[in-house]
Length: 189
Image (cartoon, rainbow, N blue to C red; front, side, top):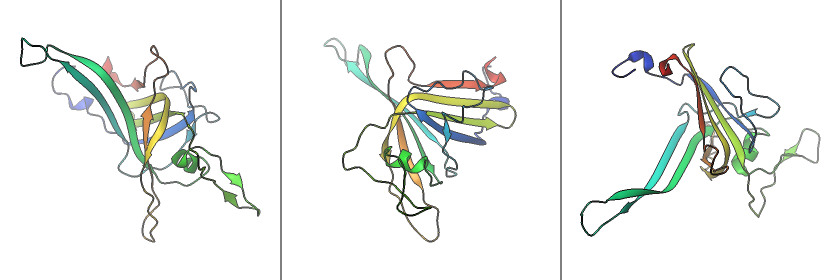
């Protein structure tokens, strides 16, 4: 609906971030549950929530006949999602550090994570879901991407450890979408 309508204002009241192996099929709509065997919920995030950034680079085509560009050509598209995880476990630490698995340690109840000297690709699928009360459910799915930036980890006696990541979408091919929004929301009727 065009014009002002307060009923179309959305607040991402509560939600979750999930990861799966790259290319894992996401639910086709918002009524189907995420497969808990394939999709791992990364748990609590900071109150800063999730930040989406879509940045297109347009190159101007300049002409001799005009001081303004005659047209623009798309030369680049970056789609990133940024958030800070608060839980430390077998899913979050490898996601932040780069994919190597958590291993059993020398003693019972002990575990270890080895950060490789040679980084390797750790492509994943990313799913984000949020609800606005009972009015709306949104899902944002990136079928292929990778953590491309991490924030420093601060260890203090007065605050939770935060695993801050930037996840960047990677094209699957020239046909499939870079990302998909699924909405259960009457505002789109």
